[in-house]
Length: 171
Image (cartoon, rainbow, N blue to C red; front, side, top):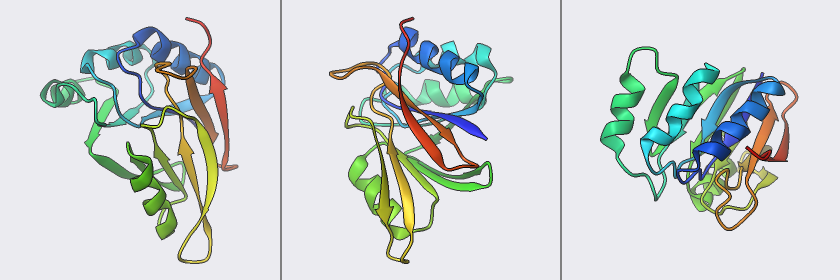
């Protein structure tokens, strides 16, 4: 299963839509958003793609009431998880939180195959040693909104556990 991992859209609907469109063209079947959506209406550009969208909030969240209502609307593709999410997808255990220091600590526990975060606006994919003697994959998708850095997202293949940082195509 391929997934689109992104974060820090900061109301940039055009770049958010361009990233997801590119990921869909490359076979993505779900979207994980690591926070800092800002206005919940930003996520409305993802509805036409029909992919499940899992989102956590960040430090620039905006209106959580409206986001919750949007996620509960009949036919919505959005699932709002709150501060963090712990889920299984494509046979893998995944944890998503906005903050990198929190994500690194969770990755080190060895409970998840993949831990995703945002906030730094710098994309990276890193293997983190765990206290159980193994490794977890830590992914920061950068900023899909292009805030202070070029707009990026990460395309991940959960079967192969291969993750690639991609530049968002011009909208």
